[in-house]
Length: 453
Image 1 (cartoon, helix red, strand yellow):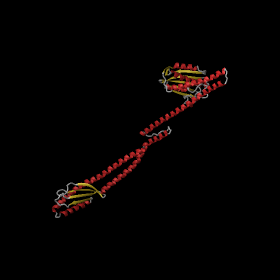
Image 2: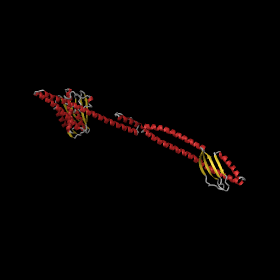
Image 3: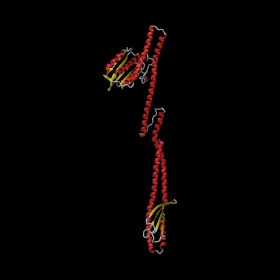
C-alpha cells in the first residue's frame, strides 16, 4: 500500500511540476518574442517616418533619385546593423505606382537555427509604393531563453529526485504504524496473542494502532477465557469421573463380596450399609451438580428477609450437626433486613458455616469460634462467616470455588465433602449480583464475605 501511495502521489507531483515547467517555459519564450515584436514594430514606424522625410527631401533636390535613395538606405543599414537589424527597401517600382496594402505585418521567423523578428510594410504617403523589410536578429536572446529553460529543467529534475526521497521518507514515517500493525496482526494470527503495537504520536494512524491494541487485548482475553473454560470443563470432567469412580468401586466391591461369600445377618447389614452410604454420597453429589447447573445464569427472585430470623435458622441447623461440641457460635446482626431469595441465602450461609465447622474440627482447637455477621454497606449488606480453624493455603484461594476442588484431598471423603460447597456459594452470590471473597491464613482461620447482598 505504501508503494502504491508513493507512486500515485509522485506521478501526480511530476505531472503538476512538469506541467508548470512547460507553462513557464512557453510563457517565457512568448513573452520574449512579443516584447521584441512590439519593440521592432515601434522602431519600424520610426524608421519609415524618418526614411520618408529623407526621401521627400531628396525628391526635391536630387538629380538622380534612385542612386541617392540607395545611398540613403545604405547609411540607414549601416547604422542599424550595429543593433542586429537588417533593412531592405524595394525601390524597383515606378514612383507613381502603388503595390499591396498599407498595413504593417510583424512576424517571428525561425530558420536554420536563427531567429528573427520580421516587419514588413510601406512607407507613409506619398511614398507608399516603397516597401521596407525590417529583420531583427534575436538568435542570441532566444538562445539565452533556451539556456534558462534548460536550467529550469535541470532544477525541476533535481527537485523531483529530491522530492522522491523526501516523499518516500514521509510516507515511511506515516505508514510505520500500519507496518507495525501488519506485523503484529501476523503474529497474533500465528497464535501469539500477547503481541502489541508500539504507539507513538497522536495522529489518526496512532489512534488506529491504539484501537488495534485494544482489539488485540480483547482477543487475548477472549482466547484466555476460552482456554480457561476448556481447561475448567476438562478439569470438571476429570474430577467428576474421579469422584464417581470411588463410590462405584466401593458399591461394586461390596456387591461382589455379598454375592460370592455367605454372610451372616450382621455382615449382610454392614455391607448393605456401606453400599447405601456410597449411594447417598453419589445422590448428594448429583443434587449439588444439578443445583450448580440450575444456577448458571440464574437471577435470584429477591424479597425482604429478616436477618435475625435467618441467623436463628442457621444457628439451629448448625448446632444439630455432629462434631459441634466445644465450638462457640456467635451471631452479630448490625442490619435488620436484606433482599434476596431466602432459600438460596440460607443454603449459602449454611454451607459456609458447615465448612467453618469442619475447619475447626480439623484444627483440633479447644476454643473454636464461628462468627456469623451482617453489616450495612451503603445500600447493601455484607454477610460474613469467620472461624479460627485450619485455614486455607494461599495458593489454593484462587481455586477454592472451582467445582470438585478440595484443599485436603486425603481427608475430604472422611468429612463427607465432594468439593462443591464453595462452588455453590459462589454461584448463589453471582445470582444475587454479589461478590464472594475469601481471606485465610493457615492455622489462624478463614473469613468469607458476601458483598453486595
